Length: 282
Image (cartoon, rainbow, N blue to C red; front, side, top):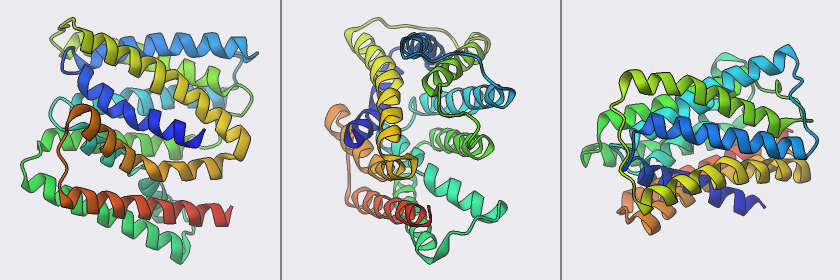
């Protein structure tokens, strides 16, 4: 289940990269969230979940819907008009490192020596990759948008940790998607020149990103957390940089060089060390 989740989650960057080549990214994402959100709610209702939420849960729904889905994925979809899916996946994989860094700097959380080592290794790996990519001409706007996205997701993660409860998580996720859809739709109308180039590539990529990363991966994640616990499940995220880059290379034909591979290995090991330290403390 853990490997299946990582494969589906990491593949989202490549499918998004393909889709934005044929349609306006924010409008595309708004429609994707509408479809995914409705599907998640239908599945949640079939599982006996409800939409009767506490005030704290509604705050989590709105914040996560806007920051995680709206800003994070919106910025990534826009970024992939200019940068490759593999680079976007590497930047997004900074999430556990940034959460740990911000919690250590501003929230007084203790990392320990092993956690500090993992944090330093992960950040060093990103420096290796970014230095090479920027010197090779990676678009600075696309890189900045990808970093904006992961910073928004970091903020959402820290702001609402523990606020979603455990009995109706898929319902909450569906509602978050509808919040994001409602937020992105007017932004797209205001700032995008709407275009759709109908093709089998667009239909396939949109269907895949809506059903697989959007709904199935989310459902597998919650089943995995229920089976082995959140801390152990989180350790699978250390595979995201590797699989994100590998899938982009295999499916989209994106190029890899020695520095990319070295950087991805360093980031992967750094996240693994950090997650191991977190699991040991838990």
